[in-house]
Length: 86
Image 1: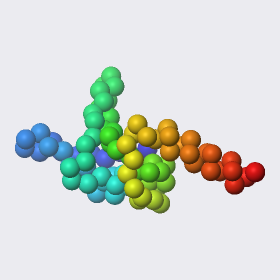
Image 2 (image 1 turned 90 degrees about the vertical axis):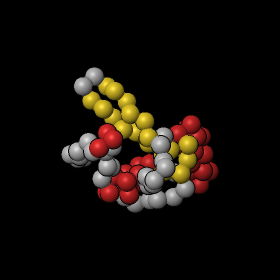
Image 3 (image 1 turned 120 degrees about the horizontal axis):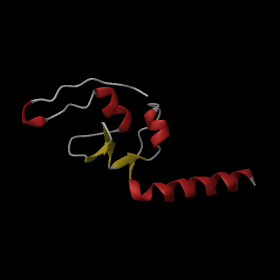
Image 4 (image 1 turned 45 degrees about the horizontal axis):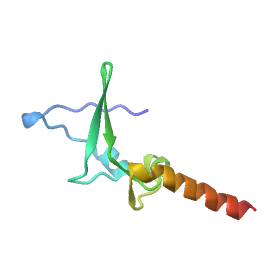
């Protein structure tokens, strides 16, 4: 887990640190959602990189995929791996 400290600017704006934007492929105009979890605020991209695990590690950029499609993408990848291993 990484922790960043940011300030709330005028207009209640918050700047997402460059390292986080790059790892998650966030660009101007992208949407994020804020989850209120007890005493925590969690900022979550509405769109995730094609491979969110590799993107978090900074190893992949790739095409963006809607979160609704993530399950489908994972299933397709697993099916491909199963075909290759057969």
